[in-house]
Amino acid sequence: MKSQRRSVPVVWAIVTALVLAAGCSTEAPSPPPTGAASGTGTSAPAVTPADVDAIPEMKDFISGIDGSEGDGVTAPIDKALAKYAAEGVDTSEIGQRAYANPRITAAEKQGDRDCYTLVMTGGVFTFTYELCWEEGKVVAIKKIQEIPTSKLKR
Image (cartoon, rainbow, N blue to C red; front, side, top):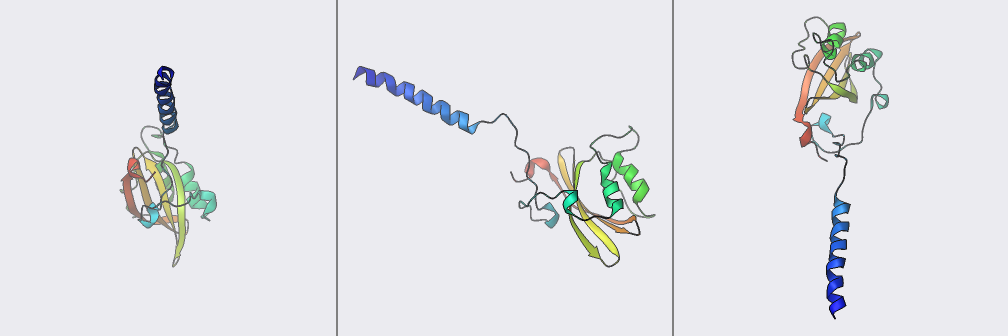
């Protein structure tokens, strides 16, 4: 009877250690891609720029967005806007930020315009924009969503 009492705490300690080990991870979970472009916030399969057929100018626009502060004077997004934004387009919603991980999640034709949904991270936020292009220039920019990355469904 005495040996049975000693084995119960040992078994309990082993079970507890296994349960704790199974629930712990050394890697922080990364946020899954979301359906942010649709505004639903539901999970959707990851879409990379290669999955969405984009015009060469749009591909070039996002190619320099690398998460850096740029040269300390002009952010990479501002350089891209200077090159591709049509005269008179309001860039204040999208400019002057250090964005990273840009990906095109949707493309649609609106009359003569090629419009793309662009999702990027900037600091602790995930931004979703719609950029519309005509004749190789951005003619419209609309912010769709700005949410803290930590609020994305995991």
